[in-house]
Structures are given as C-alpha cells and as structure tokens.
Length: 81
Image (cartoon, rainbow, N blue to C red; front, side, top):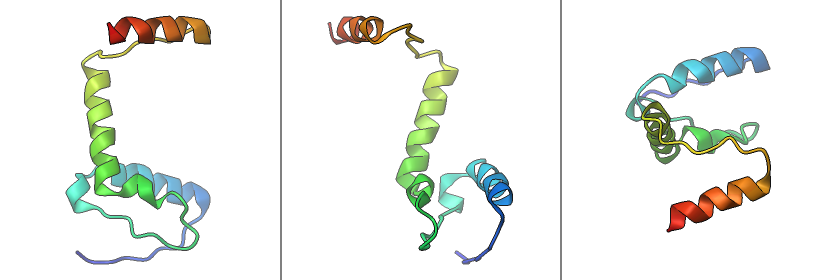
C-alpha cells in the first residue's frame, strides 16, 4: 500500500472520507495522526461492522423508532424471548 498525507479543510476532509467509505475496506486504511481522533472509524474491523449494519438495514432488520425509553425497553425484552 502507498501512504498519502493530505492537509484539508474540514469540509474537504469530510468529502474525502465519504468517498473513501465507498471503497472496499481492504483497499483503504486510514493511518492515525495526532489531529485525527476518529481514525478508528477507518479500521478494517470498523468498516466490516459498518458493512454488516448496511446489509441489516437493507434487509429491513430494524426495530424502532421509539417514542420513549419504555417502548424501547419493551421491544428489547420481546427480542430476548
């Protein structure tokens, strides 16, 4: 892999991150820097989890939204049965 270092404005950085997220996780690795406190979002493990969530959402495997915490807790208890 080749390492590329960029200094970008916040808005440009966000646009680049959105683009990088569209690439397969094995093709992109964000290397942490002192100013990047969200580098964990770009680890292979995190991106695999994001892909799993995207598949679950696409398949309709969702619960909620909830109007309050009590509704949420009742729904979670039903799932445990």
